[in-house]
Amino acid sequence: MAREPTTLLLRRARDAGVSISRTPKGALALEIPPDAETLAATLREREQHLTALFDWRQAPVTQPAPCLLCQRPAMLRDPADHLPAHKVCVDELLHNPAL
Ligand SMILES: [Zn+2]
Image (cartoon, rainbow, N blue to C red; front, side):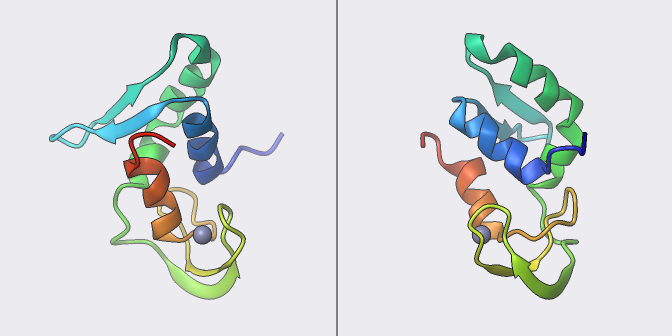
């Protein structure tokens, strides 16, 4: 089975009520509801990829392709997997306290 793109994993986590942020020292901080433990294991395995989504300075820019989150054309590739995504779409998932 192909690995789930990090941006879609992030959205699935938010839909399950997981809160994702970074500590002041840059470590990933996860708040996981008690009923989301299976998802929690996946999130911990992918911690480096999730952390990468906080820093877009090295994100590749190339030809437009549908953003994995909103389907509109995106020239940016996400810093975790280098798949099409808008920074604003990822930021909405990372920084909105409640969806
Ligand atoms: Zn988008």
